[in-house]
Length: 493
Image (cartoon, rainbow, N blue to C red; front, side, top):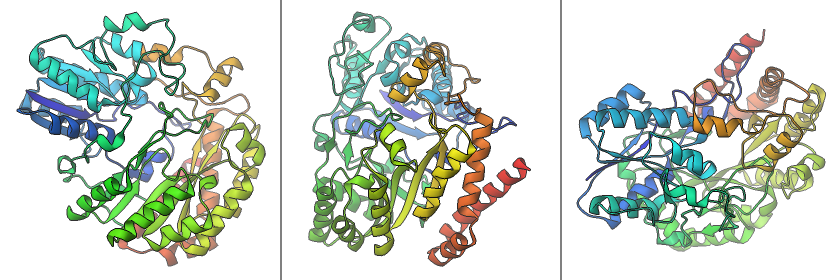
């Protein structure tokens, strides 16, 4: 069979923070383009555990393809099975891809995977454009589905795989896995021993130049050393909380494979890389034991590093850490259930500064307790005192399956059921919710842009940033960011 796994275009992605002229503002997407690793894992597992199939992988976002390109590709290969990876905010594009497939190859089987069917399994299974869905992690489940389709037998016995009919038996019942989203009662597929999974086959994406605007090259490899996150941050919707760590040897085998392919820059994109200081130290000891040298960075938490783990990491190639700081007061951190205090955040950034590790502070404004611009300014005051090399400032988005969202519904800040209606009938005019009890979204976007300018336009910051620039690529990235801020400033005039 011909099997395609596709990451759809983002032509009709839900606008999360529109400005007064209907334009989106600076968001995380502006800071880089990363491969859809989850989908690549699924294809690689299928590749290594089946025979005789023609396999295709298409990342429309990475290749900057639109829906006409998708139609041409589908018409060219005529796939028998198509797996569509998804986020709820990109559901319109996912449905459009499925419609395209069905128009060109009506007899094909289209399966929806990724994040959306995890969050809305019943609604996803009822979408007429899809023949099946995978709820959870798809490596085992999708491979079993393909085997069943090849043999022409029923597939509804596979845990995590459902269609419009088979999912009804679980509606209204209690969830069967407490480690999974508590509000989702559909039994998921998941991989308990992540070391059983093969290294993702990057030959399928090697022609695409992924990048990180905070990086030093235009050719980035992303990896994960673990799956899951046990923390309970009120704004986060990571679906599977059990932390499952890959062995350091397996991870470094993957790094070596990437080095052999010509990659020189690595970002660990785990939900939580540094679960403990011990993990960080042991990872560095494994690097040392193999005599490897490479530049890497990770997303992590300030409360799970100490000086010794950072010193060890710096010695073994760590360049940068993106810390989830979020807000500038202990009261705010407590309300977010971050499990960290301001004092530890300051210590972590101070250690990084001393050791020469670049820091990124991920920040959120528009919190429920921020009632006016002065409240947000006080939070940004802390960000500026922290003085990281980079800051990413988002406006709080209220995503379903988070306690922050539940609180907003209970407080009548937003209406319950909006996302469910969108999941049943996705339309491109859907807007993401925000906590607009005290300030409307346009005010928060204006303050967000002002905060970016306040952080990045400091003369001390500009001079320090230029001195630390290591490559023409990095210089170009910084210039591009500055131009975006200048254009933002013009719109505010």
